[in-house]
Length: 186
Image (cartoon, rainbow, N blue to C red; front, side, top):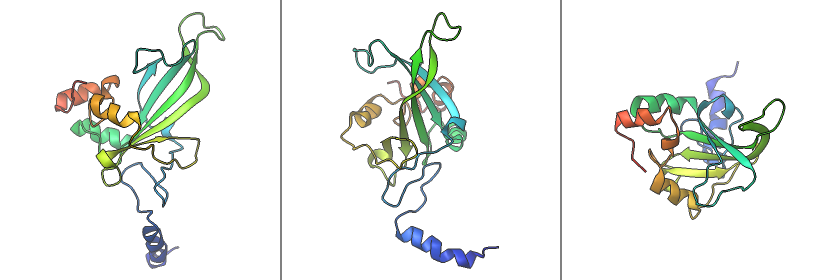
């Protein structure tokens, strides 16, 4: 049995190394890199978009892509109470390839096992200017934050319906935010 007193030097070392725990589901290395969650597919599923693009030009002509959005369970529980995404909220955007012909499918599209991208949107006002940080993930490797000059920050500020998130595309979350009075029409 490990005694609490024996853990104090280890806890002190972690804190002095800058590895203080972040709120919620977000975890970071001592140098501020985001540690991707391995279990995000067990989180709360919010929505899937198909071939979404924020410009007039299609993003990938001739190829379909699904965007799956997940949020950590604690943040979802808090959101249902308040209509706001709490400190420590982590969203994962998973991009998967789409196909229309395969197996017995004759019409429509389905997701493939091809992972085309993975991103995180993390709420931590003490850590990030504007309260949120974006990360492009590459497997289990810790990810450095996408610089604030990237277009995703300005776009989410201008068009995010709740707390810089695109809640307007989450059919189970949007009515909660509308009812709570936290929804902003983009």
